[in-house]
Image (cartoon, rainbow, N blue to C red):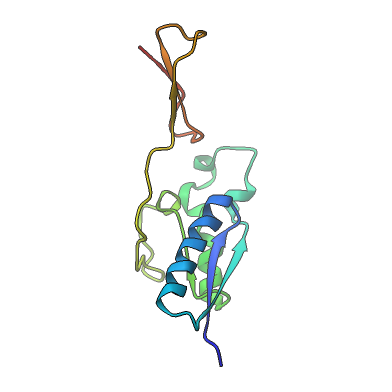
Amino acid sequence: MQSVIRIGSRESRLAVKQAEIIKDQIRRCDQTILVEIITMKTTGDKILDRSLESVGGKGLFVKELDQALADGRIDLAVHSLKDMPMEESSEFPILAYSRREDPRDVLIYKSERTGNRGRVYTHKNRRCYRNFQ
């Protein structure tokens, strides 16, 4: 009988890509293991009408995956560290970290419209748009 490892992941493109990286690493270690990615929408993904800080913060992205682990629906969960609560769960501790990719996620440019000033853009709300000289 073939061994199966079920990886839990949020449905976002980034989360699925991170889960695929872990899936590939597992398969490189043992090609006989079947690795499945189980995606789910988390509370943090569902709240679109208000700031996440106003309803509980970072733990909103891990609750459903933790519950799936507890229920035995998945064998491990892959998270972005930015989504993890500050306090580590004693029931579901962080057991491993994957190699970090390039941490830069900004675009910096100058254009005729901005004159001598440049602009920095990022898609993260916690990092603001900035003009600089």
